[in-house]
Structures are given as C-alpha cells and as structure tokens.
Length: 116
Image (cartoon, rainbow, N blue to C red; front, top):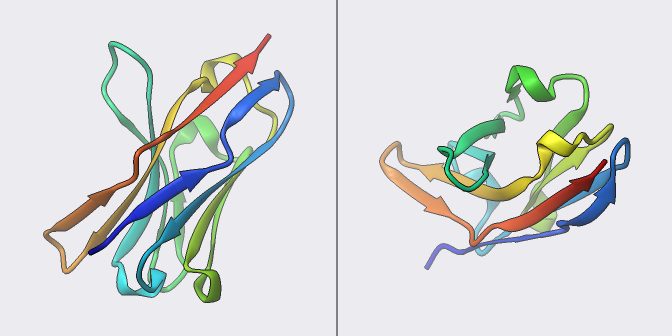
C-alpha cells in the first residue's frame, strides 16, 4: 500500500518561510516523479514543483527563485522549502507521486496560509 503523508503547513506572515514534508511508505526513488501541487477553493489544482528519480527538478514560474524541492531518499521524504511567501501562496498543498507511468498517488494535503 502506497501512502503519502504531508506535514509542515501552517500560518506564516508575508515574507516568511515554511518547509513542507511528504513522507512516503515506500522508497522515494521508486517513483518516476514526486511533485507538489496546490489548490484554492474554486480553482483547479496547479503544479508547483516536481523532482524526478534522478533528482532533476522543475518549477512553476510563479515560485521560481522562492521555492526549492528536494528529497532525502534515506528518509523516504520529499521537501518543499518555501521562502519569501506571499498571500497568494495561500492554498492546500498536496504531494503527488507517479510510478510506472500510470500509477498516481496523492497525499491528504496540508494547509498553508500566508497573512499580509
């Protein structure tokens, strides 16, 4: 059974930082890609950042230079370091992992709220 559990969300002031964690029940390197998405009510879920099995990362334009995705294979965890947070970053952040092209897994989400 593959499980993803996010943590690290919370309330932070504009300009502050948070680090989200996504802990997996299996080896992180088993996945083709692990990514972070976010969603606000009434809007579609949007991609924030991804990291592949080789450690290559990619980011949405709206977080480039502010967010960093990384992984710790020994800890089976993927992180999202979020700096210079803005009120528009407020959302529920979800961890997503893809394996064998067609298998897709989601975590339960963690709320991030940035106050102005």
